[in-house]
Structures are given as structure tokens and as C-alpha cells.
Image (cartoon, rainbow, N blue to C red; front, side, top):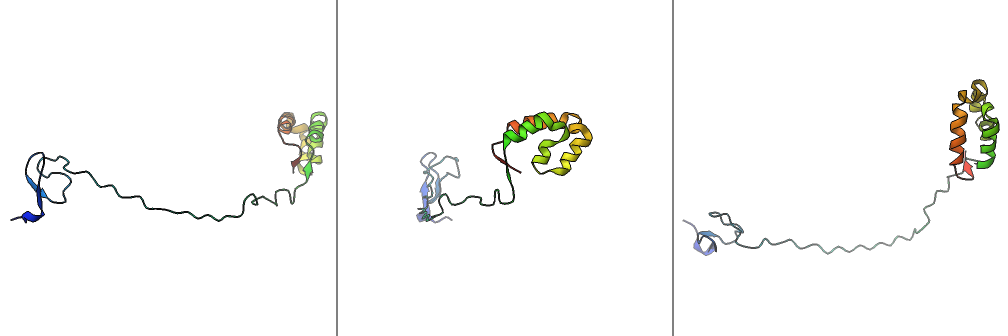
Length: 124
């Protein structure tokens, strides 16, 4: 039979249940509060001294700044022959613009709009 020292009575149905039981095995009701685990005490010691030193020093290392407005005016007036592409140092694209008359006008139109939204100066 069962050891009676490790038993207790259910406060709802009166049946004997184990001493450490949280639910009654007979009626299924909760007889005790569920013990919540204590949260561990976490201490964070952050000694990061690199405040505001994480800058990208290579952002414009190999790129040359170009003036947005110079490129825009070249594109607007001479975009069909790729003058703005030569200004940016993209000779291959400039030749393509010459041969296709500004990529049939679509490239010229798109470049004109894109140049308006670039920052001044922008890097190429």
C-alpha cells in the first residue's frame, strides 16, 4: 500500500494524493499554487569605450566626389550623347549613350530623374 506520511488530502474531493502533488489525480482540480521559478539576477557590465568611433573611413577612399548639379545639367542638355557619363568617369556607358542616342531616350530620362535625388556631392 501507499506510504501515508507522504500523502495529503485533496481539499475538493477528499481523496488521498501525493504530498507534492499540485493537481488532484482523482478530480483533476488544482490543489496548490504552481511555484514560479525565480528569475536569475543578471548583471551586465558593459565597458565599451568605442562610442562614435565606428565610422567607415573607406567610404570614399577610391571614389571621387562629383557635383550633382554639374552632372544634372550635363545630363539634361547633353544626355543623349552621354556627357554626364563621361563626367562621372564611365566612358563605356558614355560611348553606349552616343551609339544609342541616350539609350533611345529612356536612359537619358531615367538618369535625369535619378540625378535629382542624389546627394550633393555624390561619389562615383
